[in-house]
Length: 117
Image (cartoon, rainbow, N blue to C red; front, side, top):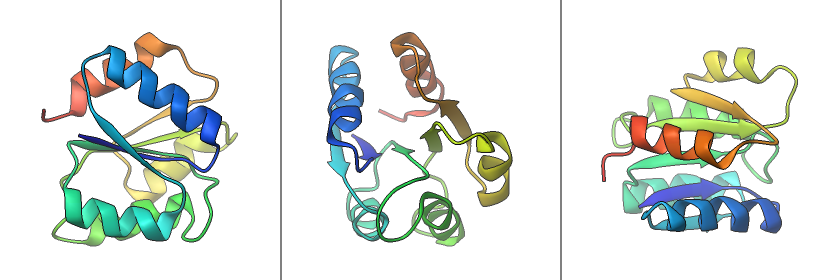
């Protein structure tokens, strides 16, 4: 199961559909605070998260999960249109990043690289 942290319902649905077509299950949460809770409960195979989410920001979410013993090993991929994406991903400890807009094949390549399903 892959956790999608995205507050734009259209983008979240699109990522979910791409994952489903690739044979993966997913769950969507729309804010950083809910994402921390769900990541601890579900222990997803990986997390795709935007930087610009409500509540706990995407960078703070990444830092929080990477510092928590229970969630630090979950691969965390930032999906964002932020111009400083690479720098922010490195700064918070993300495993990888992908810019928006993205190609479906690139999303699935990241799943194949990181997901433990």
